[in-house]
Image (cartoon, rainbow, N blue to C red; front, side):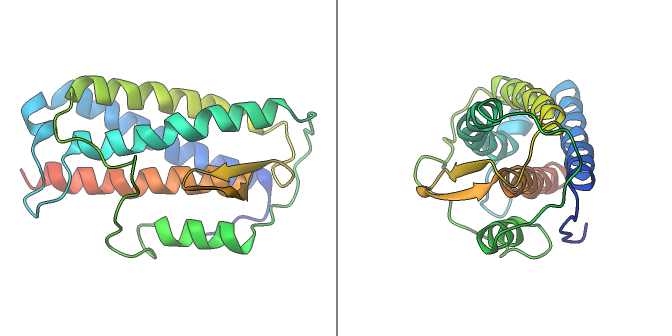
Length: 188
């Protein structure tokens, strides 16, 4: 998947919705077909287990999803399609997390490092619930001006991203860790 910046709200939201739906379907499949022991098994290279990858993503969703909803609902509706203008910080955040263009390894920030002792199925169920919530937010976002809504970033709340960039960042960050989890599953 190549790094792409989108020109319009509709193009961006279509891309993000499709990617979020694929992520949801993949994790539902894992929930139905993989045992807890496999979900908790660390990577052969010493990396996170599948459950740890998803727990890490759940921590980000715990922060961003309520912020998205609150900021969207505080704005007046604006249903027309409009151009998307990413900021330099938005582009940097997206590029750094994109599986094709980001560094291969990052050290997770304090508060986002998952425990190695996790209730595997609860972690997956939480991710599934968050993902359904995210898909609803993407649906609602179609009625708003995404360039005018700003979201404080989780690791430095004094910095903000435009909603379009924040949604893209969150979903591409999820893709990065779902691919990591998938490599872990294939390595078993």
